[in-house]
Amino acid sequence: MELGLSLGDTPKRFSFLSKSQKIPGEEDLGFCMALGMNGEDEIRKKETRNDGKRKGSSSDLPLQLDLLPFSPVPRSQTSSNLRFPWLTQNLATETGKGIDQRTLGVEEAEDGAALSSPNSTVSSFPMDFSIYTRGKRDANEGEADRGGASSRASDDEENGMARKKLRLTKEQSAFLEESFKEHNTLNPKQKLALAKQLNLRPRQVEVWFQNRRARTKLKQTEVDCEYLKRCCEKLT
DNA sequence: CGATCCCAGTTGGTTACGTCA
DNA sequence: ATTGACGTAACCAACTGGGAT
Image (cartoon, rainbow, N blue to C red):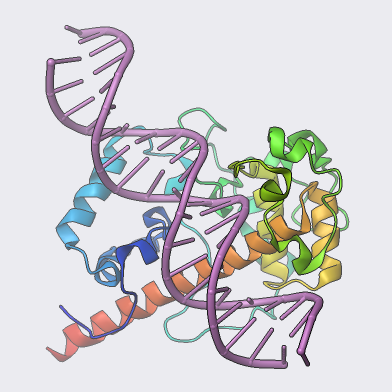
């Protein structure tokens, strides 16, 4: 079914929308439509995934984005226990083993032992993330805390190195996620504080928030699309 | 008018999984 | 039945370009 929605020109555009982030109990039809792909293909892929070792992995947990059909809701109302629901979840998934390490979003926050209490805030987070700094690239970034858009230029290019792929740790991702739920944009001060606390460059924090907002928006689009689809089905 | 921020779109590295010899 | 190479899909950090402030 065609809805005539302009949701993207290429499948690549939606390539980072995780099927594992689907709404529980919902089908992926909206996603398939958005991709302009054969629904059967997507379902087959999903079944393949579910049959594999990834089954039961943290990546299969639903991403909680507080999405509602057609109504972007301001995140102003945040009580401590509503803000960090995943922190109180007692997820039995074993860290690392059998888990697709690629997915490091909110759903990876099951390693609750590494997190402070649900009431924890940015300023009170006790972890020392310096131990998580990885890679040759990071080793060269003692001056990493230069802030603002001046850090936009590739550090690697400045160092004459090829771009090195880094992956944030579960703890870093969970902490960023926690911060995102409080405020999905950052002022320079918050950015610097977060970067310092997580032992990341401000640019990394900035990029993470940008990508996270993009994922949220895409997820909302998916929900909207599904809602439209159901409306069309009712009309027909 | 330059600096900064954000967004949309893209790139490239990494990982899990299926297939096949 | 097992194993290792290979291809593919998914994920995501990081980048680019452009518009807005």
